[in-house]
Length: 313
Ligand SMILES: [Zn+2]
Ligand SMILES: [Zn+2]
Ligand SMILES: [Zn+2]
Ligand SMILES: [Zn+2]
Image (cartoon, rainbow, N blue to C red):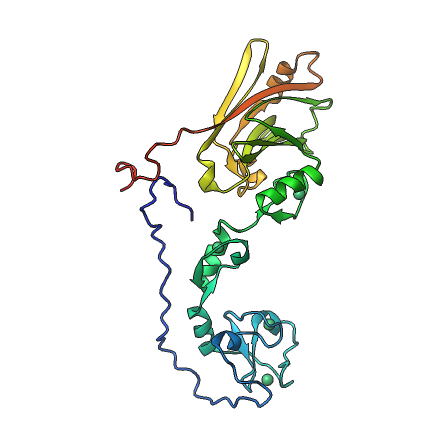
């Protein structure tokens, strides 16, 4: 997973990719496969590994029929036990030799077109892709199942145009949250504002939920970027009235962490409903919270990137 310590540029992540042993003791099947005349001679291993049905790259398990025609595991489930090439019964034969070849090949990360330069053997590639910094982000809008993904500029435009989210420039804010029926916490009322400062985008969430038996309101900030960049930023939130004040100071969470995950870890300003209604003044029936906040960039160590001995062992 990600490193905890990003100060140390010199440290390697210690996750050397496993060398895949190509001299595997498995002898390839002694059966000789006659290459059917219908198949043009393969000019590269990559072509051999192309599924003849869907043309995707084949990864283990790779299947073959009694005549040696290969196909990928996705296609195998679709062809009703008939080899799509020779129409014979397919059976359940794996092509171990080809699987070994597939495992040993180095392949580009699937986010190659989004800028990732990494190349890996298959299994490392799958692991990497789950955490690749170039993988698209999910839409950070909470409260609906939005399936839109993309890079940050795309998502900012999407939030503004499709979710009609308030956009705000600057690193301080002063927001008023007004809700006439603050007792409805079941349907998690929520609001989202996008802040643009330091050339970055941040999402301020505000919502209601049931924390155990207690209805609460919660505000927290998420950073539209990766975990590795988020550590340079901090934020504070303040809410209060009538001589009382709650202050939260924290580090924004990356939008890689789902909205629900952040909420469930209570990583933000939590205001109990009674207190929130007290802060709202009036007759305590309506929620009228003034939340002020600030985002700042942590002072970078002038020797940033240099290993601090006590931190890097
Ligand atoms: Zn296929
Ligand atoms: Zn066949
Ligand atoms: Zn990648
Ligand atoms: Zn969306």
